Length: 212
Image 1 (tube, helix red, strand yellow):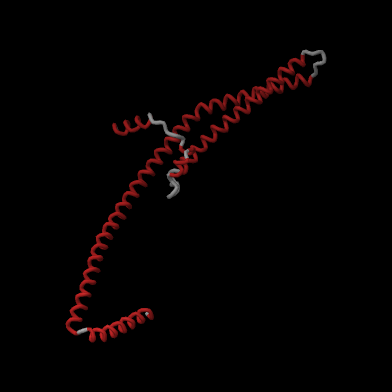
Image 2: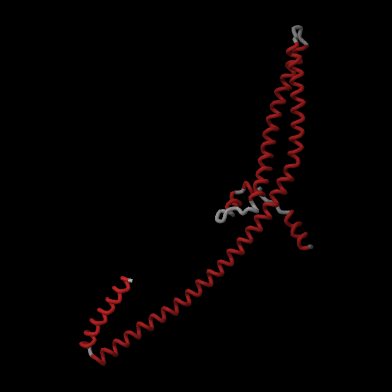
């Protein structure tokens, strides 16, 4: 428990990049693809980030609209004091004020939500980071096991190769010795006759294997 608290304390002090916007984070899954444990966390974080961006854009648009309505109100208020003021200007004034009230309500709601979103994004990013680390370390362990297995296989192949090279060399030396002794005992003429016979038999064996 103490180690877990210390771990979380140390982790809280580290600034984590926004993972869904980091190309290197996506490349972590290039070989195996993203696991099912990662996908919903990624989607939730993307949704929050996109929501934050949309709210900021909408808030800018609302501010522009509000400023325009405020200009209209000033113009209409000037019109109502003129001698030839009419009901149209008065109605327009009321409508603009009503729209401004609606905009103010929306802006307040958006601003409140924007205050909460950074915390939600940070928490979603943290969950995604923890799941990513679990996946990555599991992949590292799996790769290490395979590396060790392949390494052991390679070492065994090297040992077998050395043994077979020595075995091959011994057989070649033995063949030379046998042929040399046969030459000394039976003479070149006898060996030539048997060489022809041996070559013929080897050729027949080769043809029989091909037919099989």
